[in-house]
Image 1: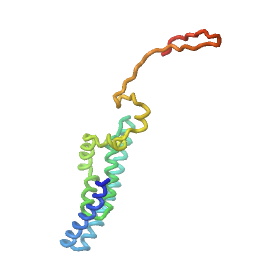
Image 2: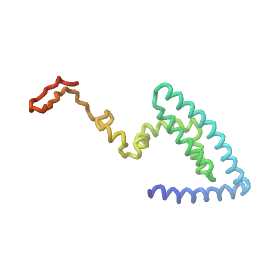
Image 3: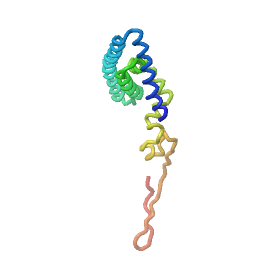
Length: 167
């Protein structure tokens, strides 16, 4: 929580400093024009890459595979597109890193290798409802014991009725 609060305070300050510095070099109209151009290019790239990523997700699902990398890339595209709409050069740089495939794919694979996706999949490390319902799943290291049982029932007269073993 404190980390996010610090980001929301520090990033706008950094953006203002960078915008002022760029404005002092190329002028205020040039700076505003550059911010608008990066937003337009970012939206175009977001649309183009978003469709391509969506098609890759569909292809992986059609093959019966889990599209982990593609889904993470989709999240990165959403974050990148949002950052490019935010005025500023620092957020634009981060946004372009999230949108350009040559940079996004290795970053997504690095995130998956580091296990961040597992944390996202589990909701930040909290057990999901599915895991709580099935504690013997192989993911949790549980085991299944197979066996037979015999059902014993008492009849009205007090005699025991033994059924055949059940599987």
